[in-house]
Length: 101
Length: 520
Image (cartoon, rainbow over all chains, first blue to last red; front, side):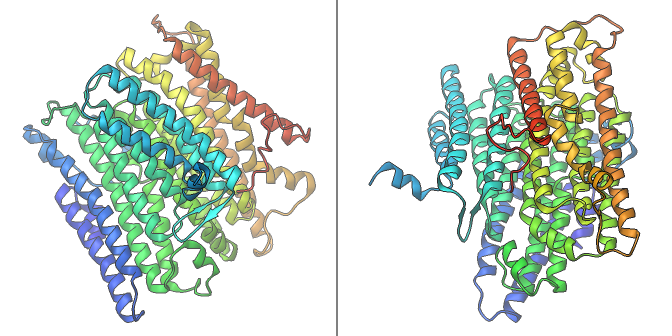
């Protein structure tokens, strides 16, 4: 779900939510391995603590930047396309297509 | 207790020990808008970066390698830190040139120095937690620097469509980067499932290296590196951002952001070597084909466009594709591990030595002409002979011209092929008869084609530089550009001659060290 959401969504919020799914999936991995494979492990807890602080700081900054820089130009908001790896012909052949056209 | 014994405690982070006081002092001037305060902080930052380069090299030479639970510092890490600090010094020059009169200039410098500081921690990191956390914090720092230089200070509202598009491109780029971090997180979680590994070194030494879970985790981590570097065909966000962003941003992306991805791969290199050594014949084919797609994709993109920024961005991507091709050549048993590592580091330095001066000039022209069309540089070498000559030599060096710095790097990709022809040395062992050599021939042929393709792209720029312009338009460059270009041209020639003397067995090391036998 997370992967599909990140790769296919064009809306900013959808991508951010999909990223949460991705984080949760890794979290489940860590905790389930810790529970069933190792009797007592502090490694996963330390990893998750530090990883969460850093990755959420990064994501928070990205979200903050998005919402702190707003515009009143309605059609720009509607047309915004955040698909991460979407590649059109103009991305590799010839000059770039004008985004505002 | 003497000062030296105190310093021993921070080994190998002497460079950080120099950068951190500069940041702390700069914080006291953080809100100042006075020109004198900006000049003071700027000089302090420049001096701290230069001192950090010196102390980084000094600490490695005097104290040697270092390793503990969290960090590992060898010659490779010392070279990487030197590269980042060298790039940081150059970026500082351009940040100053384009942003000195901004109100938040000092804040920008503080964020920039902090990002450089974190990058040093990332380079030295050895433990999974440290690798992940420092890489994410480093990306956060790069994101902050990029957003600050692309924002109008104090203006919350976006006033134009073009500004909005740049914002979206920045978001798209860094969401891609965040995705890579999440892949990395996911990969580490699977590795944890395979065994209680805490560093990549433990993986190689373990008997669980063939565990399916471990392999999956490592595969995801390699995918994270691929995605982090925005390799073809995932490059859309990178190309779009670099076309429209502020002038300093390309330097930051090329020489702060991307090297981190390459350094991450270099941390994984022994794992890659292990798998490649035991890997199948098809593994080598896959890597070679993937590298070919990247190199051709990058070069074709550069051929078809008339935008200088896009040309340089595509060539940068194609150049990274050549490193990728190096992995294919390793899998095909044409290159050995130390040579491949050497090639990665040398290629990085070569790219920086070429891109900093070239983009500085093109950027100056872009500002004057208010367009980044390649037509603006038409006839530049005729009007400004010194600038033109320096540019041509630097570009030719990047393409791999004989007796320049680029030649040393490029020739290593095809040298084994010459050894095969001259000495009859075998290229590939262990594959079904005949097939191995065909793969090796293909790999080397692709390396030659990639080189030729790159040379054609560079030749195109050089031809436009020297051809007669359709309309007379002269650019008067400040003295700084002349000095900057001449220094880089002399470095390209100096390293080129030093490499040649060494390559052809003269035994003379005019750089003081053997350039070709550095064993990382």
